[in-house]
Image 1: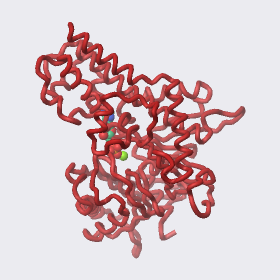
Image 2 (image 1 turned 90 degrees about the vertical axis):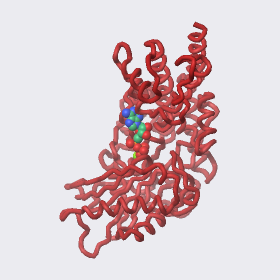
Image 3 (image 1 turned 180 degrees about the vertical axis):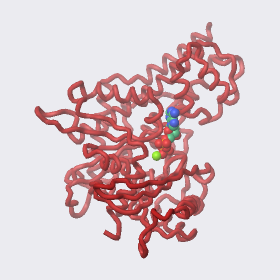
Image 4 (image 1 turned 30 degrees about the vertical axis):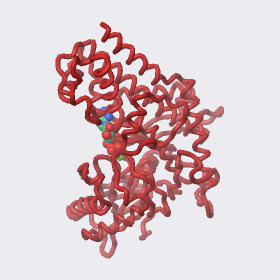
Length: 463
Ligand code: ADP
Ligand code: MG
């Protein structure tokens, strides 16, 4: 039982380091608000890039016509076409296909990546039916959702700042990704113009606003994490030139790179970061998002195996393999409701080839899942509260009936129920019961695709 005590000591230390009492979260939300101000003041003013999106009008419902959208940013990419029918018709018809990106393409060359995308787009265009064709003489137009940090130079151009989430192709950094895609489309013979380049958060905000005029911000919790919101144009000192007529500008926060001394980081997070493709970067993302949560759990289990023989005298070899434990598997273990935790047992067998675990060990694993998911969900809620504070929606004036809706998308939020529930209850903890009534979180399932098509429509050359 020395071993048991040792395991317990490691678990307890981990729990303490991950703790997120509300006072700590308040400080983090304040830090988020401060960093937002700093990032809006000047380029490089904060770890938060607060990128100007060039989207100064969100969809109204008047958008009409056939548009394509392409979503690149995670393990899958999607191409879609939609027919928009204005106020009456809304989304008349939509079709889409999902293509998974082979891992080697994510780290190959720019040409290989963009050729791969353009070819998939070509195959999709070739399946256009009678009722979904551009009118004669009209070029197809595309909304390109590209979920990596980009310095936009216009609504339809922008240079890649850096890759994240497992993509890594040095030569693309600094390049205009629209030019890259356009060249690839020419190479493979697709006749299409990129009308709008948008981050997935901006697309989700656009799609969310189209469905609900009270949507003020969008948050992605998927492979990575990020947020965008509508800011007052005169609150963006770094934006040069004439202010947009609408008085608003959508800001892509790139909140995955948020950092603060108040973040509860453990030795496991620090090691994960150092060994990652982007050390020192995207620290907020690395404690919150789907790409990393399972990997954090693996690291804790490995430590317990090595230092306290959690799985017996030999460390199971698979346990040493980075990223072998995916977050959906962690989620399945966390939600195991069987009395002897059979799901946990079978996942350990499938992923790590570990058999014959005791119920006690399985319970410990569920506890670790809970620590990791709770921390991520509560930190996400603190980020959302930071945005609400920045735009003055964290309180309500007497008689004010204004609603604030946050559009949420991403597989982590959609499928990891305990994560989602914890995020929501933490936001209520922040807001209090009364203000909570005016703030809602809405799942915007794949809103970014429609959002990008809507923004392509409002930036069409045929208007
Ligand atoms: P992306 O962020 O790559 O655009 P998604 O929004 O579909 O794509 O999110 C996919 C991510 O969501 C996966 O990488 C995974 O981390 C997470 N995810 C998917 N399903 C689940 C699940 N059942 N439980 C927890 N996380 C999940
Ligand atoms: Mg996505």
